[in-house]
Length: 171
Image (cartoon, rainbow, N blue to C red; front, side, top):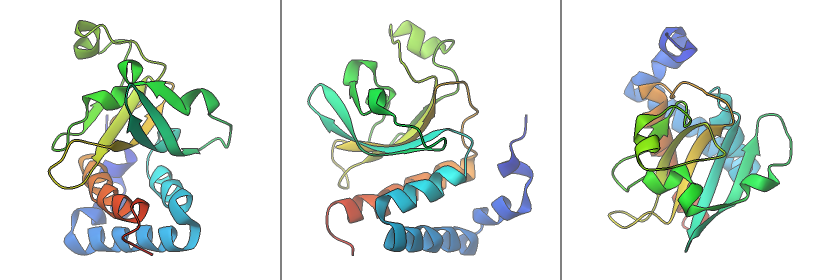
């Protein structure tokens, strides 16, 4: 099944360098005007997943530093998650991780994983070449398709910009 990212010309333009640079410029503008939450709102508006978040890894837990909910509801049960229950634990510095339905995914079933989150796509937040210190992710409580390859690339590039801002190297 094709998503709107595969068929809508406004999203296809992101596959060009100028389109990608434009998308990153919009993201930076949203970040400058609305802070991290403005940036997460923009990233979330580009996909079908309900949530977009930045999690920080802290020992055996991951904690939401920022959590955007498309429905505007409080996500308190998603603010702190044991790493053993988190899909972010499968992200590496060089490899994102995604799943459309955690209840039926063979890899997760083989690893005895059970999660509150059903669909997930996340990339690492980390200094270059080091172990992830957190994640930037889209997720939902119901099955969703993975973001398009263009959106996955965009999220990876966005993570660098957000990591810099989160660590005080930007405005």
